[in-house]
Length: 130
Image (cartoon, rainbow, N blue to C red; front, side, top):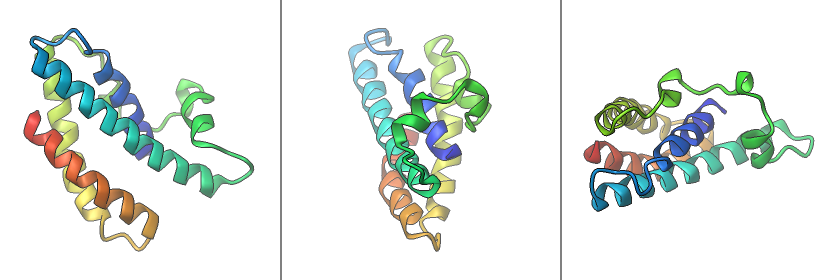
């Protein structure tokens, strides 16, 4: 669930740059990265909801928990600050997730491995951008 929380929070933070970036190409790039992260969050939170059972849904996990119940890295929730601050935060998280997801593709858990295989490609693009 922590992986999904990171993606959800970071996606929200990056989406705050829509129409506020230093130039149009960055607005589009950060919006696309944000959408990729929301997709990753959805895949991971759906899987977490399935594991929890009891009628739990990805939406319940995303929107019906208080802030203390989220398991994201503190770095992902830091304020955007200026554009450079945002890109530095993004770089550190992208570098971590590229390595982490690459290793997760080897997981014995088929679902996690599949999510990692899909999202490691996106993360490689994100890292190149940052």
